[in-house]
Image (cartoon, rainbow, N blue to C red; front, side, top):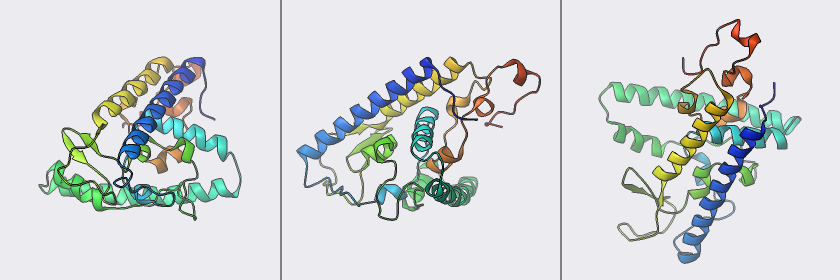
Length: 234
């Protein structure tokens, strides 16, 4: 079953598109002011190997764009095969992170460790170009300019910003809050049985492989109500 569509959902995805446009504008502003520091180039794929997860609204947006562009054919199969490989690699890494926490490592230590691990994005083509560039996630769009989350600054290691320097900084907390709010809107608009579905975050690989249909989204239909559905959180 294909991903659901409704006027209410389209409004939410339009809000998401407006957010991506705002983020792009902020990135372009920093890039224009600091052209020597922002080292992003067309074929630089450092961010295409970073580990990060997507909120519900962003995962669904990426899934929609992927299905629209690669509805069938050999290229779609190739991407999904790479997605499966990437997802298995991520599962192994996350298991090791879990063991690290159990052994006494702090969350910050685990995050620093994860920052050095790399997994190639299944949407990265053989020419080192993104196959879904116009619909890439927000993390990809802001990679390369100074960001901050929880009061701690971050920047791509390939860029040339001076450590301790004062630069315009994108506040990831605010962006993530907006994504979380849009994800919650989806749950409410759909009337999902899974009230915590907006707390489910997935990597790009899983966003491509998932089917965001009635079963996954836990919709209350008479047919579905006869049998209890298992939440993705369980």
